[in-house]
Image (cartoon, rainbow, N blue to C red; front, side, top):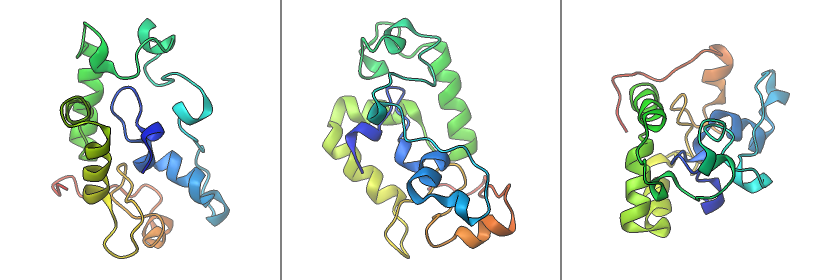
Amino acid sequence: MKEELIAPCGMNCSLCVNYQFYKGDLNKEGFHKTYCPACVPRGKNCTHMGYKCRLLGEGLVRFCFQCEKYPCKDLRALDKRYREKYHMSMLENLEEIRVEGMEAFLKNQNLKWICPNCGELRCAHNGLCLFCELETLQKNKKYCWNREKKT
């Protein structure tokens, strides 16, 4: 897991379905997903929330917690959606980075999201390891993990 894959909003892009499809070039398996190499590695500021926030859009802060308006209503709404649908909290991620530091955060994320079968990272958007459980997604392209299950 790499620091540059942690977005300013606290999203761990290495867990994103579009990043994982990009990394594994999984459209060759019959999918039609948009590939995303993540914002920071390609020299972009936050493309997800940057259009709503001047500080993010202009790259004036690395993380949202560096803003005096933190957490803003847009970040709280994003966090709520991700907590409910994807078992991930942007606010918890940002607080862990702020308090514990990036190294500890990356270590904890790896422990939390690692696939016990193959050692790759599971996808936050569907709970699957796209390296050893891809067949599940091929059978049901709208697969979404059990919303009752918590990681």
